Image (cartoon, rainbow, N blue to C red; front, side, top):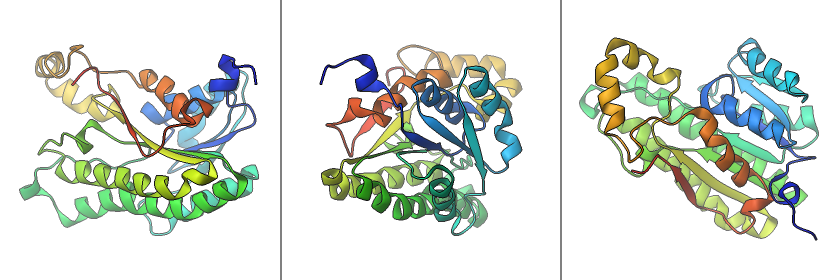
Length: 256
């Protein structure tokens, strides 16, 4: 086969589900996958939340569909995959981006905060993998990309529970990567550093000078990343370009 950018990175004929794709990194990745040729299914807690992203994808000449569910609810991960399979007739790519991050040191962590982060970041991942991996294996091709965090490897005390769940999420992907590699189903993690999303808006607005100083000294580039800077890595991990890579973490941190 002649190698071209399209045969290596192109996603024509593939269907992708991007969880948490109404904003931030998830929205950028969804738009990027569509531009690479994938049919993209958006996800948020409400379909209305994904409307702006769907409109941008449509303006770029691509079609998309949306599904809604709250991944904090038991069984929601399983239902989401089942609905995506029914909607598209098969799911090739799963981007696990939706997450809950509640900043609190260990001594201030409440039971409710812990439950939310475990349910969204860990339990729903288990449910989605239980449902999608056998189906992908049966079709002989699949890509699962977990959006992790630099905190899974270098945790900060303020995100103790979040960091732990992100480490556990990668562990899940890694354990299944071993079993599913023989079927052409590859599972990897994309772990960003600090990305300038609305998660950081309150902190930036409350102390602009402090934020600027923090960012300037955080990484070798001296800045936060942009959601769009995660798209290339996500396309790589979702395509045939990563055909000899599974169970790994790709860090995109600005130098850390």
